[in-house]
Amino acid sequence: MNYYFGIVLAIISNVFYHICQKSIPGHINPFTTLVVTYFTAGIACLVALLFVNGHGSALAIFKQIHWASIALGFSIIGLEAGFLLAYRAGWKISLAAGIANAIVAALLVVIGLVFYREQLTLQNIIGIALCLAGLLLIQL
Image (cartoon, rainbow, N blue to C red; front, side, top):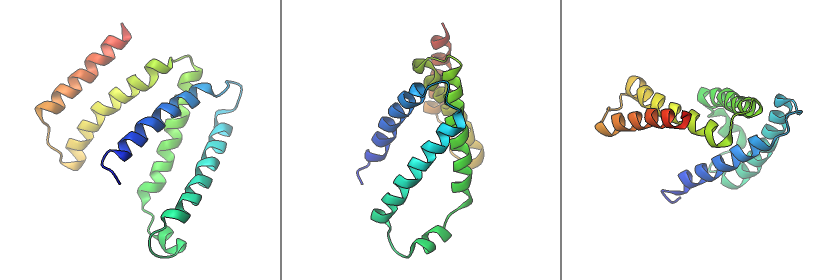
């Protein structure tokens, strides 16, 4: 695949994600909507698996699943429920994701340093400073 395909897909999907999250009516139970969301995603993934199943049987492929895939499922539930509840509490679509993503970006730099032995560069420091400055400016 093209070098930029994944990031473009993530950006476009993230935009639609927040539009859809903000559009879910407030009277619907948040976890009911997540069940429907994940059922839809599960069906889509099973269909995609039919087309991109490389080598081996489905059983062999599922035996390769790593613990991180299960942990990812729990983190996605927190992400989904968190934004849904934030929007229901009155957060603006123009602020919620920006604030969350700026804080996440700064935290990931620290996590990269501590757990993955990544190097702290001047560019990282400037990026963290810009994230923090952006958070301050958004709140004004």
